[in-house]
Length: 142
Length: 277
Image 1: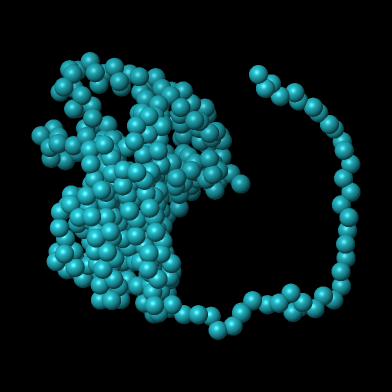
Image 2 (image 1 turned 30 degrees about the vertical axis):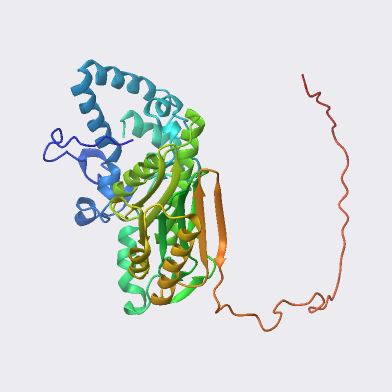
């Protein structure tokens, strides 16, 4: 659930990650894999909600942790983040379906249904990635 | 087939990949003459009234798609929980999905905690969800229910605004319905009087607004239970089919017929004993 009433905690601009293109070797756009790009498409979001949805979970977590820090002290968000990191590591290889059961239970996602559970189910995605390339991307070799 | 440009599993939830394509297509289709189909709106009159014993909700049953009536018997009063119902105006799919999500969340909650959900909880969930999507979900809802704290009636706007009042009307016919409600509403009305008032309010919405019409549905929620009367009143302008339009069996003549019997043989038989202790 959202926590509200934290205007004093929010800085003037919460840093949001941009659209992010596929960066290949030498930090240049990878034309072979993702085709030609135009600067306008990469810089500006095409839909009003695109950026907001991309960073929604991150911003929520930031707000909740900052709230927790103010109420209970520094140890509370530290302990929680340690548990999140441990739970996030329990997963299969990137091209297989991982259930994220521990992570979902920690975050409370097992007790609510939202559009993330209904739309674009990753287990029914029409596009399958090549296993070797996905492993290389995950290990940072690409 | 495995694609080599997919490096991560796609995230679940809304996908904005086609937005720029759609915007480019808007103007391109046949030089701007053809447009994308409009989503089905409910262009509605919905109303709700708090009375002495509970809450009375009412709605018309017309759903429009542009200038055409898409559905003459649309159900606009959605089930949320045994003690709460919600009327929805706006884009039909949005109200349908939003109330479904709300109902599922409340069911999970009541299973987890063993309690009946309160109306304020439903309203807060709706408000969070609609504000998160900044009004792109076009759903204006009237939520009414009876819980341990009393009888409640709330309205939630598409941008996430809420209002808690004893009588409400929303939709394209809300001004007409509100006129009737403002004139004859009294606090602590009897049930029959409240039903008549809601019926009159929806009726005036149907008469004065193009987007509302056909029948009137009423839903009465009390501590004892829910009475969902659909339709409460049928429109006097219902049309009757002149003839039967279905084809009789034998209209198409059968030229040849070939029957192939499917022969199955038992390959393996296993018996599993059920433990009924």
